[in-house]
Length: 396
Ligand SMILES: *Cc1c(COP(=O)(O)O)cnc(C)c1O
Image (cartoon, rainbow, N blue to C red; front, side, top):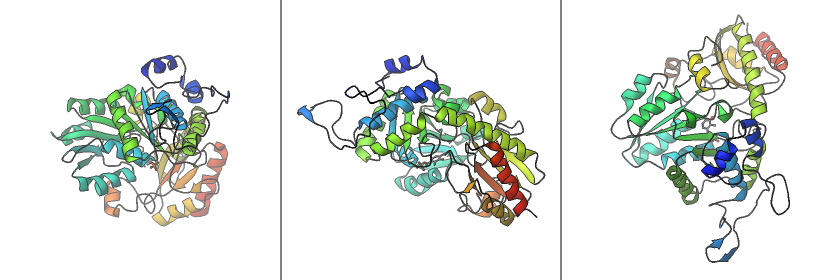
């Protein structure tokens, strides 16, 4: 598992993801036998003659710690190629770098806030056009395509209502229009969902979330089976320069080793909490794709191996009462972001989605009392006990 070419990928296929997460891209150092990938804190590399180097010239272009991470992530997504970036946003930016003025993008009306921002506040100024549609409605996706559409960008499950998009059908629509289909797989992770196997051309990740897994690093990645695309991404790594350093790459490699065990616990805890919330008299609605009542349950069951650690719920309460609930938790920390080992809680209306006017927010189904949680891997009884005491302290 030393190189990222197809032959090595095929050799990797003998192993399951639990094994690959620990071993892929991580051979012991040939010189010292060191088991773990060293942090190659280094900017430049010796050449024996001009142009005659051992694979590395300059660390923006390539760094061995980063290479190991790229191979590891490619293996997790069953991809032939992987490229890492300084953040999830830098990955998304790199996909947009493929486009030219006049091109059109179809995307979801509930994409990550930062994605919406780079689309509308950066790339509209470069004459790209974006159409935001309800991605659970395949006809709406189809209708949004134009002659100039070059990219379909989607997330599933989405934030914060955990809507589920049918990846295979969406990719088919994109390809029928000769457009690329890119999927932000941050919420599901490759342990639960592998969009390239379902027809997507590119997978994008914020490594900051589950892949890093410990809320201590920011990073991004792009995975693909298309050699030409991978070369373009490599060109942009070097030409634009939004690459992660060796320390960040090391931290994410440390995280991916435990991705499968962490995800198993995230999923189990989230599913127990979802069931508990559903039986609570002050909870009006629970959004978790693992619940049969969730509109995306059927598609999620087909395209995901489990339902993830993210969920949200509406209380029979005012915005202020819900704010008290999220302020009164002791194990759940009131904070934005997600995907770490610790449980986080937040209220979209006054926090992550505060920029959206209230009328629009309600129309999109985001009630004032909506609460989103990133379920961590603590003991589930402590998490449920914490929600219980916060409800009792806050709800009249
Ligand atoms: C966090 C996040 C991003 C952005 O990633 P950063 O690492 O914060 O730049 C993109 N997409 C989704 C779904 C995210 O949750």
